[in-house]
Each structure stands twice: as structure tokens, then as C-alpha cells.
Length: 504
Image (cartoon, rainbow, N blue to C red):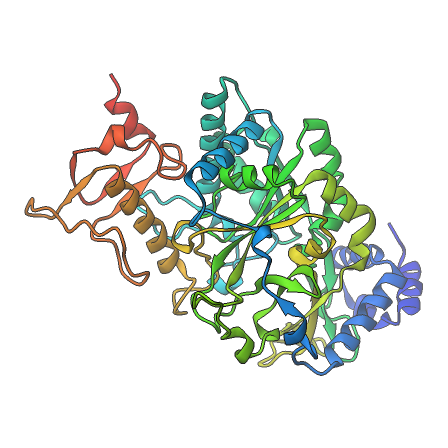
């Protein structure tokens, strides 16, 4: 263990010796923990991190000059669609995706480094339950989708196959996530195929370039953004593990989308048959000023432009068909080849520019009192997973319906969107629609048939509660055998036990 003298010398080189100002008054245990934490910070990297944070924050905010002239929508040749795609093309894409899954060449990678702070909970967001009849958590829904897509691919190709699940956590989420999976027996996945690893943490920094102490014995640290994935892949030799397993294609997604289709065969197949090294699912923006990043080109290079960087005039531009010109909303749902990720970790990651997030960071003042600031006082630097699009040789985008594939869980129910209620409603509405399409009929409490509404406003509850386990259907397939011509009263919970009871 590094001595206090050694750590102090390292901090002096970094210009951050203030982090030890309470060291002398700490008990042996907290003192040792603080010294161990500080010893892991390289002096030159710490000095540069703090300097860059202060400089980046000091730059005047605003839109990049001349962006409107440099901006272009993605060329049609780069875009596929699950909405307007030719049925035969969709079939071929799906078939290719299932083939690659059956050959054990596909992995999924979950970005799960953040806590559920905005949800009002202290545990990882994947452990959250939105109030479904089954009471399943986000992690359980995702695990069951992996199990189902493995089953479907295996049945089609007459083999057994595995989709490894890589989960990037952080210092905050690794232990509770590990414990949660163990408590739930890894949701009946093979633990050897669930690989958890940590992203790096970076100190929060004051506006004048000083790392922040959140307690006398603890530096205020934050995950380095979902773009910290690329350093974490190298730190933990994840790409080597993928290569050993024969994985060639990786589906990367965020934990908070309750509708996410893991290892989506249609998306995987589209990207593979297009020869893409990098791809992104997109949804049509709901309205011009919707606060989502836009997948487009800048100076002919694919990237995501943040909504705050696009002027209202540009955001409202229309194409010849009357749709928004810049309508490809980013949903953090990506395809990468393993070879592209290897190139990123070897060559391109150092070229990624950190983004500034100004936050309210609790700290201890000069007298050692804990202060919870009422306004932003610190800088957190982070990179974004989509920052690597610019390095792709063959980038593609794939358009999907929002109501089929995107309902993020970001806020508590006190917010008016992206909350537990909207996420739960999105999933139950999707399952109600699947049941109707499979030929089911729903009855009210008096036995009269309910209206069969396939299209529902996003703000409304479906006429009947219907939850379909991912173990029964991945994307609405195979339900006719159980539901066609049948009448049900709400709620209908279609899970594997219900299906088993129907079999001879």
C-alpha cells in the first residue's frame, strides 16, 4: 500500500494536494481507504483531467459555428427500415441474424454504469420494477429476451447456441448488480456467459480545476460516461474474451429501455448483409424540438449531433415528403463488429473528446462540513458511446417504430415522461397489440367484448391488461396457437407456466 508521503508527493505533482487536507484526523481505516483511492490516480493524468475540465467548462456554451451549413441527413443508401422495408428484405435480414446467432457469433453488451438517482432510488436502474403484473425487473426482462432469442435461433438452425451477455458496470453498480444476479440465479442463464466488468471512474472537478472531496475520506468520483466502454474493453480484456468465444458482432444498448430487443436478428442481419462495421437504430423524432440527439452527417462524416447544438430553424426543416429533414433520433442502440471495436481501443479512443456535464456535487468545505449545493458547482467529464461513429468505414442506420422498440426509463413518476408509468404502459400496450394481432378477444367484467384498438395514444392505458413473458414471445411471434379465437378477461398474464398448462 502506498504511504501517505508517496501519495502526497504524487498529488503535489498533479496540483491536487488539497485532497489530503483532512488525512491527519481520519481513523486508520478511512485513512487507508483514502490513500488507496488516491494512489490509483496517475499524477499526470489527474492534472490533465482537471485542467481540461476547467478549460472545457470555461468555453462559452452555444452551437458550433456554421453547423447548419455542414449538416446533412444520412444518405438513403446508409439507411434501412423495419417500417418501410420490403417484406422479403426483412425476411432475409432476420434469417441472416438468426444464422449468425446460431453460429455463436453474436453477443450483447449492456451499458449499466449509472445509478437510479433520477428515478429516486439508490440501486442500479436494471434492478428497477415498473409495476408490471409479473413484477419483473428490467434485468429479468432482458435476460429472458436473451433466452428466447437463443431458443428461436437454435430451433431454426437445429442447434444449441449462446448469446454471451457482457454488462459494463461502475464502482457504484458492480456489487449490487452481481448480488442481484446471484440472488436470482442469473435468471437461468449460465453464469459463465454473463460477464460483468467495470468502467473507469473520474474525479468531479470544481470550476477552477480542483478535484472535489465529497467526504473527508472520499474523492467525488463519477463514471466516465457510456463512452468509457472503449477503455473498459481494453482494461478488462473483453475483446479477447469475445474472440476466444468466436463472437464477431456485438449489440450494444442502454439499460433503461424497457422495449429493447436484445440481439435483434433483423437489425443484426441488416448490418451484416450491408457489410457494416458500425450501426445505429433510430426512431423518428416525435416533434422538431424533441430533446434527442440526431444521427446525421457533418462534413460527410456520420455522427450524433445533440439537440442543443441544432438551431430551431434547422430542426424544423422538412424534406420533399413533408417529414422532418433531421428526423433520425438516436436511442443508444448500436451494432459493432468486434474488429471495429478492436480498432477503436487500439487507435481511436484517445481521439475522443470528453463532454462537459455541470452538476450539483456534494462536498466538504474547509471546516470539514458536508455541503449539498443548491446549484451546480462541479464538472463531470464523460465520453459518449456514439462518438466513434466518425471512425467507421461503413456506417448504417436502421429505422424502427418507437412504440415497438423505445420507451426509456429515466425519471420518477413526478416527471411527465420517461417514467415508470410511461415505461409500463408502453410494454403493456405492445403486448395488448400482439394479443389482438394473434386473434385474441378481451371481455369486460360483464362478459362483453372490449373494443379492439390496435392503435393507441401513448398517454392512454390499453383497454385490457395483457403481459406476455419474453420466454413465450420475443417480438410477438408464435402467439396464434394460444390466442386465436380465444376470449379473455383482463388481466391476461401469458407466461411459460400458462403455456405449459395448455400443452398435452
